[in-house]
Length: 145
Image (cartoon, rainbow, N blue to C red):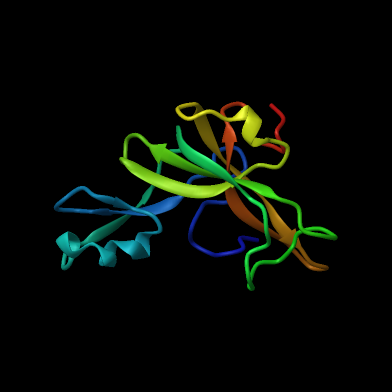
């Protein structure tokens, strides 16, 4: 089950972010709802599109503290995580997301190819709540190829 519905497809082999594209300008947005925040696109029709699955690492950092609610600590206690900003070349769009577990900042470098992965954000007694994450190309699951 997606932690937030409508932001990505749940295809584990080929997941995609679900974005928007302004018909007249060709501008891309993620999430699609952000299209209304661009004054140049007001009144433009926005088509739902599947965004590229791969891009280049634009920037990265670590999250050293737990964000405020509604963030849920996925385990017994908080563990720092890596955040990546990935530039989707075709769309000329930078998308933030966590990096799959098992990949440290020491393994990342600006410009390297990254690919989209679907991973568990947290679980409860009934569901695994899924989100998109970024992984170095070829390492989509928990840092493994």
